[in-house]
Length: 287
Image (cartoon, rainbow, N blue to C red; front, top):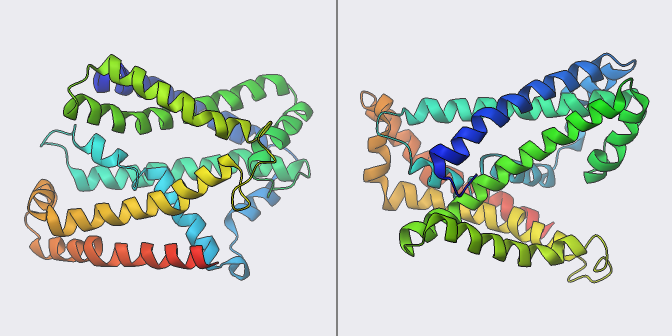
């Protein structure tokens, strides 16, 4: 997908895969909500319990935001470089946020109602996907079919995420190192294969080998989620607001007639957002 470029590979496949993901999720949501006791899962998802709120909750939420939008990794910046001057950035950003929120809520409705209907633990973490859900599917009519649909959805989600992450490196290698796209993809895949081996083995042969109490997978996840993405987000905000502002704000065509909004956004991007992310980051590391 990446080797065929943005238009011929990534965009074309996304136009096919994302609607399929949306349809399959709706099928699974309806199936789960039809089970007795499923409404308890809906209540668990939507009724707030403020006694559970903490700085760690905020840090975890911030990590989810960074992952969902790939803000700190540079995905949005890389894809933004391909956008033409006629694209309305503010409205496009709004729809990205809305659709991401919608998919997140649909994912919750796809798993939690069925989870509660069959009396499973909603806090099982990764095991919720790979252990609990197969048990649930085994109890459903046509469970094998729904199991295939569910894991196909996971494959689509993982594939589109991997593509967006890979495109960052490919773009840099093509533009800065003058590599052919196919060669850049091959080089990146080899590095990914080598670096992923310790993470994969941390669930098996290397499960007992830990550094600072963390396996290779947990350590990689910690550095990426809790350090790399937030720090990358802070750097991106500072660069956009204070070093490249003259180029940044000129692309917000909808704000041309509202110069006051540009000043507000600049303060938010250059001061408020970095300060908030930094406070949450430090608090999370202290805890």
